[in-house]
Amino acid sequence: MKAKSLLIPAAIGFTLVLILLVVLKGNVTALEAVVRAPSVPAAELRVCPIGPPDCDYASIQAAVNAARSGDIIKVATGVYTDVHRARLAAQEYVTQVVYLTGTITIRGGYTTTNWTTPDPDANPTTLDAGGQGRVFFIERDAEVVIEGLRITGGDAIKGDTTDPVAGSGEKGGGTYAVEATVAFRNNHVFDNTASAGGGLFLRVGEIEFSGNTISSNTAKNAGGVYYSEGPGKATLSGNTFRSNTATGSGPTPGRGGGLLLFRSGPATLSNNAFIANIAGDGGGLYLDESDITLVNNVVADNSSTVGSGLYIKESSPLLFHTAIARNSGNQGVYVVGGSRVELVNTILSTQTIGIYVAEDGSQASLDATLWYANTVDWSGGVSHTGDRIGDPDFVDPEAGDYHISNVSAALDQGVDAGIDVDMDGDVRPRGHGYDIGPDEYPDFLSVVKEASPTPPRAGEQLIYVIRITNYGGVTYTATITDILPAHAIYNDGTVTWISQTILPEPEHPWIGYITVTVEAGYSGFLTNTVEVVGIYEDERETGAARHVTASFAIYLPLALRAS
Image (tube, rainbow, N blue to C red; front, side):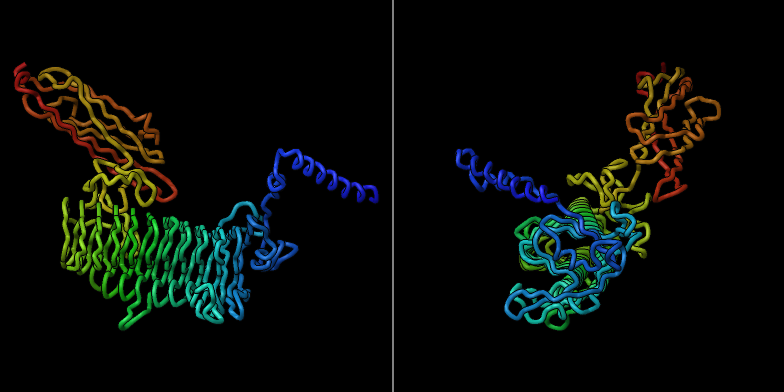
């Protein structure tokens, strides 16, 4: 043991001599020598409700305090209710479950027997502030990843001892972050309260916000999420904003029940659902000086006095493939303050006024809009082309399911807006064109029928080729029926293939052949129909059936009719 202890300082001294010699030779600076030293790998710190020996810590804040830059904190299922006070400056303090600085990842959904694969649904990991303060307070310049957590019980009003230097000002009940880089993924933020941003308050930062559910939060403004003044890029995708409330009233009505964007930088909102949120202005979303892009979003069942779905003020957003439906109170979309709005492939359904544009220089341009069951479709400075009228036939709007059915008036009626996937990530277009709205009906089977020779000759043989291509991800077991026309002679006029396997391999379509005889002396069209009844099983639908019908017509030219 003694010999070993003597070797350690000797080795250290030898290493320092080598570094010094290199520096003196002029090959590298002292700073470079330090930088080139091997970096310490990120550590994994484990947290569980009972602490050691099952894990490293019983408190998430204790793990954060012990962590180094880049470490990962894994949190096991359970409820974490400890709150802590952090000093910002002088006598100003904030209170929260977790106070974050530096670079760190916090991820829930683990168990004390499985620290490898998180499953937040099976292993709920709840951070509950119990109304004593916020859940998360994220300091300036922090780089934080927060994943797979249930964030609840935050009260920003009680989280501030005074109005802190950081300017938090009773904002962000669930999470408060200013001038930070935040990746916020697959979390459920519920039952939090604040003056602004009941669920989250995010300002002047670079934000990735994906796969979260923001529900039942309250604030005077931005019941769900407040995002403002972001010079960096913000991406909000695959989130659900449900039943949040902006409670302001009187001369200052609450703005933005689900989400409020104020002077946001470049932001993209894709594949989000804003359902059943409540506000004075902008029940679903409130956009203020925010020139953003919205793709494949659902804005439905929200309520407010003005702009029940969207309130757009002094902004120039682009909206592609949006469903704005069943918002109550007044307008589905309210445009004011000199805004310029462009909407492409939009469903505007079941509202008092589909879209209202104030006469203050504001304008709205719509292309390929499906109008249905609005008391008034539009009012004010609205230009519109490619209008469609009909029932979008949502699958189950009462349950918040705004996918379309196979009889929807939105099917194949849209235009190419450059959006090649829908809100579920399914490829668009399917079928014969782009569907209007955020959902592309999953018409996975393409049925094509060809004939040879073309044109056919009366009294001679005609060969039909049926090609069925499966673009989906599941295997179909199909019954295929070709209903032949009366003038194409083939037994009883129908051909049926039973229990045919159609694999999800576009490069290997199912192919069937039929040889018929064209009736002697016939002239005119030969029109027949192919029907495919495909039964499949996958994780979402078991034993469901998909019906695909394709018609095929050929014409015998005058020169050949007498042949």
